Image (cartoon, rainbow, N blue to C red; front, side, top):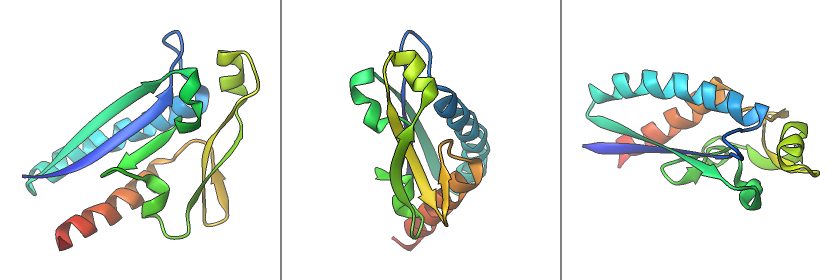
Length: 130
């Protein structure tokens, strides 16, 4: 059985995460649940892993890896960037810049389900060809 690996990394301090990571997590959870059922019938197992990061690894927060590649590397023309995250600033107690994704001229602080869906569909097409 083939595997589609999805890993989500996000800051967690004192059992709390920032608002943008929390929203990304909700978007990812909804889609992953749907995807597991759909792909199981096609002989593909979806392996989801959530990695909670300490403040020292904030630069990796809100990173989604699909088959070990960042989400933005699956989307043509997308790139990772960063901007100030007031929610993380409150959690950590100092100024923090968190990961964003820039795609088709739009900056995404929270990764929407549609971008997750697009990236995973591209990854699945590549899996089908190999």
